[in-house]
Each structure stands twice: as structure tokens, then as C-alpha cells.
Length: 204
Ligand SMILES: C[S@@+](CC[C@H](N)C(=O)[O-])C[C@H]1O[C@@H](n2cnc3c(N)ncnc32)[C@H](O)[C@@H]1O
Image (cartoon, rainbow, N blue to C red; front, side, top):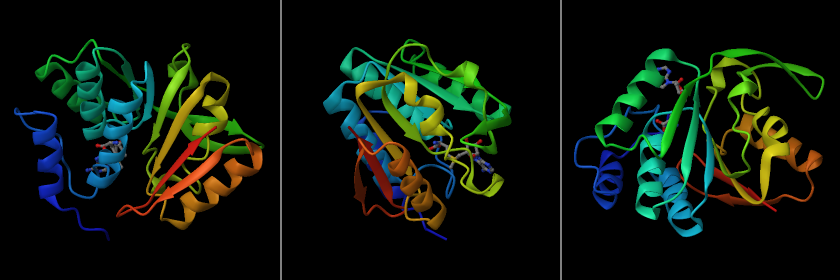
């Protein structure tokens, strides 16, 4: 099991001036070094539409980046009702409602490339072009290749310059997912970052 270093999260919290607490849960929050990468990308690239699979600390941090940018919006898909409510609580606490929407999207049977997966309702995927896709759910224990559907289902809505971030990419399951994505979408460039849990970044 990967051990999180709370100090790294505190450093991010201080950087983004989130002085009223953060929803940090050891081993369940995205890794601090992964969040560092998506925060830097959000502040540098200034995406207008961000789609996130799984809500929590990442949602709060990305929404705060959009607020700093003065532009952009995060749509976060969350299958757990209580987790969705908790994340909304933090978004409200910081007055970030203009920059993030947490959608309770229970997992449902979804056919993708000839296989069946439990994935978020596709009705919740925004109609506007997605500039940044952050994949940190559904949880890996739910099924084999749990996060595979994200790219095939979102691909038609990705903007030309969309950047995709996959957390936990050091795991064999995620590595197999990235190999399948690259077979289906050879135009995607893959950049692997050696974060604590591994991060795969895909872009055109
Ligand atoms: C790896 S977590 C990441 C959540 C979010 N991206 C973050 O950084 O906080 C993925 C999913 O696990 C679920 N989850 C979160 N905390 C949990 C916990 N303590 N026990 C079980 N499942 C949890 C939620 O449904 C969440 O969407």
C-alpha cells in the first residue's frame, strides 16, 4: 500500500490558499504529486471544460484553479451519494459553485467495445467540448479495467487540445488500459510520470 505524506497535501492547500480545510482521506484521495500535476496543468492551460471521474480533493483543487484563472468549470462524476454530498459541501464552503458541479452518477451496466462495465451514466457527460479529462474512478476493485470506459465514452466530446490524466497508472490494470487506449486511438501521445502511484498523461 502506498503511504500518503500529509505534508505534501498541506503544501498544495497553502499554495491554493484553501484555509478552511480540505477533504483529504488517506489512501483514497488522489496522490499529492498527481494533484500537483493537474493543478499545474489547469493553471497553465486554463481549460474551459474539465471532466473528472470521481469527486473529492481533486474537485476542490481544480475548482479553485478555475477560480484563480477566472474561467473554466469542472464537472465531476461521482457514484457515491455521500461522497458527492461531501464534495459539494466543500465547494459551497469555499464559494466555488460557479466553477464546479458535482453530479451524482450511480454506476450502471455500460457496453464498451464489446465488453460490459459498471460506469457512470453517460447522460452526465457535458455536451460542451472537454479540454481536460481527469480519471481517478471508478474504484479499481469494482471490476477489471474499471477506468477503461472513460476514454471511449468521452472521446467524441474531447476538444482538439484535450489533455487526459489517469491516476494510479503504476498498477498493471491501468497499464493495460493505456495500452488498449493507444491501440484504439494511435493519435494519442503517452507521457508517463513517475509519481507515487504513477500518472499517465495522454494528449494529441
Ligand atoms: C480514489 S477515490 C478518488 C476521489 C477524488 N478524485 C479525490 O482525489 O479525492 C475514487 C472513488 O472512491 C470512492 N471513495 C472515496 N473515499 C472512499 C473511502 N474512504 N472508502 C471507499 N470508497 C471511497 C468515491 O466513490 C470516489 O469517487
